[in-house]
Length: 492
Image 1 (cartoon, rainbow, N blue to C red):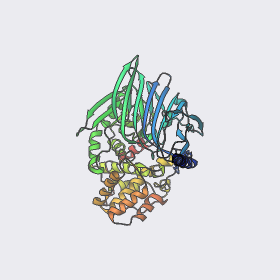
Image 2: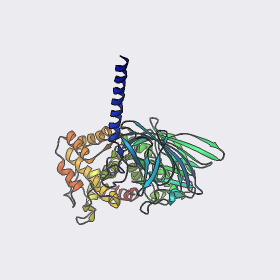
Image 3: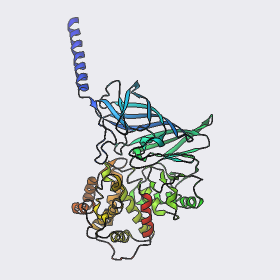
């Protein structure tokens, strides 16, 4: 009797061992890229991140950044090895509390080998300690970290995270963030979401920021320096945080404030069209940088001072905050679908023109169409598949993308068009989506076959026939010049 029990126990243990061995037998390294057709080595495979907890210390005088990144993820396969995208100098790595081996590969890959295979479906806790001088790190002669006279700024697209924290750097893997950044006392910091308090000791101040909603890595922003910070609440209680470097030219600063302080009004209007605002705070900031572009960092838009060289920029504010729905909340699945960000935000400008009586969207569309002659190279770029690099932010992605939406509106009518736009923002909230999914949604709501419309406007080189318009006027909308100038201020 006792012998038979022992045999049974032994057999059971052998079965468990055999099952475990079989589970590990199919283990392997995670892919060094997430599968983007434009950027094959961006992002990584084998795991899905849910949270980044970053503890940083930055000394502006030397541009030295020290950090500890605690990454909470879940393995999507049996992992023997996995990558993070990163450029700074790694000091130590632990995986699930155990010391892990690491090396580098390629131009921006941190390759980590855990002490034990991480089983599919289990929690993956990664801690990386690191340091470095971000401004000295280059990727293809490009630096995604900008030093300022009193600090630094991280705000770029499609990559900027590599210069300040290790990550799965692709919009397909979004996560929540907690950031604690320690800087010399007297300096401020700006980041996403909401502030969670400060603490000063021994000449250093630690600022804490929290973003609870899923956020793509390129939308994580950080600024250190002297800022005039404004805090208020919009109608309904939504926190508003705006910040301005006091060292910016006074004329630019005046125009910047007059523009950016309208953010609550703009977001309230956009909410009536796109649906409820998807995040828990709004705002923007203007650091002391020499660049010209703006970028839709989640909840905290980055604006270059030069963006306000020609005065107040209402259309720029409309564009960047429209991205909070289209790009930030509903994110692209691959960078090939960039028009889903830029075409939609550009069309929001046309809707603002319509709302303010400066020209209907149809009139702006007609003027945009007429501004590019048939032989213009503009018409050779396919907004639905523009290509990587410079073409990713080509005018065609913005303007022909917006023309696509105007053609859709004219084809299905206002009621169904705006139902499509609102449903798109709602159904894919906090997630990722593709052009094919947008086309399917538009066809379902409109009851029309729209395949030819999308093929023509998004994927066929050459100038299409002018889209059907709701007006026949060929007059120049009052908003035209302002919208054209905004385009150059948003490009990256």
